[in-house]
Amino acid sequence: MAEERKLKVRARYVTKQYDLLVKKSDKVKALFNPFSNGLQSFWSLKGISFDVYEGETIGLIGVNGSGKSTLSNIISGIIPPTSGELEVNGETSIIAIGAGLRGQLTGRENIHLKSLMMGMTNSEIAQHMEDVINFADLGDFIDQPVKSYSSGMKSRLGFSIAAYDDPDILIIDEALSVGDETFYQKALDKMVEFREQGKTIFFVSHVMSQVEMFTDKTAWIQYGELKEFGPTAEVLAHYKEWNSWFKKLPKSEKGEYQAAQKELQKEFTVEQLRKNIENDPEHDYSATDAKILTASAISGDKMPATTLVLWTALTVLWFVVAYMTFH
Ligand SMILES: Nc1ncnc2c1ncn2[C@@H]1O[C@H](COP(=O)(O)OP(=O)(O)OP(=O)(O)O)[C@@H](O)[C@H]1O
Image (cartoon, rainbow, N blue to C red; front, side, top):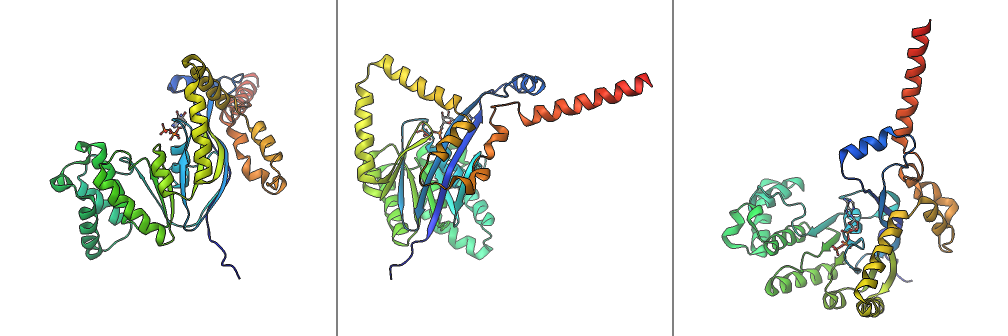
């Protein structure tokens, strides 16, 4: 009988919606304006679905701003999705340049802090500290504040801390693109070791040769959508084709194309998400629609919930004051 593969990450229509207004005054204005559509929003992810199994190494590729880091941060639990279903079975550890490192603390103190957060005892920390320091190989810089590190040095420290965390699911977000060749080789060997142990790895990179060499499957994210998910060789071939088509466009058309895609991410609505789910033959819409579409309360398609509450409260208050005044 074939051994059943363990599901490590299951994503169904995962979205991330950001508010586009940055000034506090704009937020306050939107809150008090009953005719406002709410804050203008941007859908960094428009509904991503995939299954990843134990021992798989997954490449995450896509042009700048396509949503790779957003997805990585959601899988690692750093930020919540706006809507959708996400099942993550196991401990995750993310390595992104400088992510999770405290700039005012030294490298050694950062390792100590992380060890304490992992619940290690003092004697465990001593051994762990030595392993991480040896792997990071930062020399005297290990006792300097991390804010004085170059991005390559931060990546070395971040990778070493995460690698010795012994996570089930390792997410590497561009962290190896800034290091030098020696460290890159060492990190790659460590990743191969992880893979052999049956751990699951997500590998975000713009370097196609790294993705090709290291991953089994690849997810191509394009302006917030999952354009393709499958065997790395196939996906990379299609991605390269798309890239050479894009590169051949005149400069003005490139700009127009990108602006149009970004506009679609601004105009995306929960209604469109619902339609996408309804039209997905592989998705049992009726069973999960409520959970998957929780974005409806914050979508900006209608008056935001906070404004609604505020206006109801003000109306009630007005009636109370009027009643007390005229009685
Ligand atoms: N906090 C935020 N508020 C508003 N928009 C955001 C926020 N974080 C990310 N975005 C937007 O979401 C989109 C996806 O960003 P993300 O960093 O996930 O892309 P990426 O594929 O990792 O890009 P890169 O290859 O350049 O690292 C971008 O358009 C970005 O501007």
